[in-house]
Length: 358
Image (cartoon, rainbow, N blue to C red; front, side, top):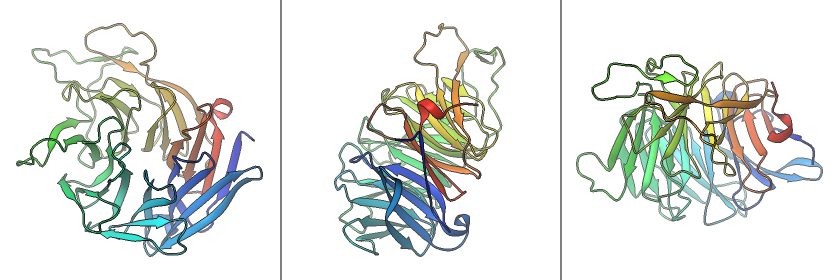
């Protein structure tokens, strides 16, 4: 197979790409006409074969599509987050129309995530400031978690089916534990300020980055994306408008980031930890690049107080000619295949081992 494959989504600007968890040769792409500002959306089902990437099926929606998630219980089903506040469940064996429609959000639904452990529920987050949990067999939501701010990204933990995380426009990473009583906090167990410096009792010294510069935090800005580390059950990476990727240990909500990664020239739109290496993640940004990083956790680091690791950029892929909006790792194979999408109406599938370079 060539080290880079390309498919086009004519007339539609992709927002999200996901590899099937069942087949290494199947991809889904959620896209929108007119950059998602106005117009309809289209779900592309793509197949990888000896001749390259082929469009196998398409499904149109009346409004933009912003995210998607493959079902964990049915290899042919895919949930799509739409701009009208709905989530539509498509079945590849049923042409043209969704098999289920879930519509409770009052504004755009911006992310959707299937529970990878129990497999019988999925969640959605919206600009209306809520997260909703759904069953694929019921049109009404099972539970609503209030966030209060535009919630760009929400996710189930891949290690604990009861933990839910989200990032939002108020510069916070929130954690919900469904095992806790509802009470006044609606299962909220932690609220981590992404852009604040560590809170160290009885200390007036600001922490240092490993490169010697002082880390004083930054002006709060919108957090657009986050992802759980697939190997460490307490590590989450975040990214957003301030161009910086940070990792946090949820066991220490006030401890600040455990590592920072600097390099993107514009906002970080999507993050994805590698399923093959505990220290590697990929990021897609509005600077039209996809970058692969090491957070530095795989190499020994001196346990100095008030020192934050600086991750290493392993390389970048700069073949897109518009905003990069989505990236995903293939679960199968040798661990180097990545799919990325951008507003240039292109889907690129590439081997990170050979294409990462400056």
